[in-house]
Image 1 (cartoon, rainbow, N blue to C red):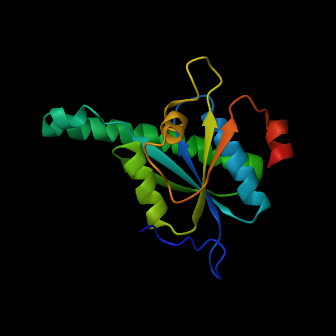
Image 2 (spheres, rainbow, N blue to C red; image 1 turned 30 degrees about the horizontal axis):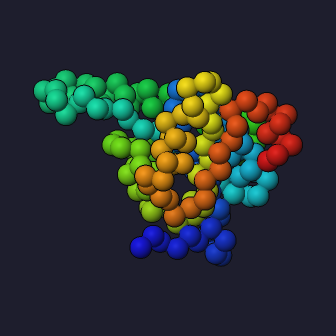
Length: 164
């Protein structure tokens, strides 16, 4: 049974969650969520995933090196998007790094923070489809206890300003 969201209880604030990655559309999700959080006196949580699919097949030393390299990349992505959130909305996001499958990691982060009330993702603009996370969500293979906002990847900053 999912935890009851506490976003509007005394001493709490509604938070937006964004999964950050290297896709071009990720900036759209961060920009939208940061602006919405700022306008509603909420917070922003940025989640970076470690992509270690081959690490378990490696020797311990190699696996540890792979994990360290992926952690460095994740921290750089988070620093970039923290700066972006500060510049577009004047807010200081929280950051989280998780290892494992996206669905389980997102569930764990949402369950650990009862103030997270909305997951914001951006859809890709190319012909390949909306992107792996959006595709997984709309396929219905896993469900979240919070609403999901899908931001069109082609929105400009001005579009987002008008909507958020």
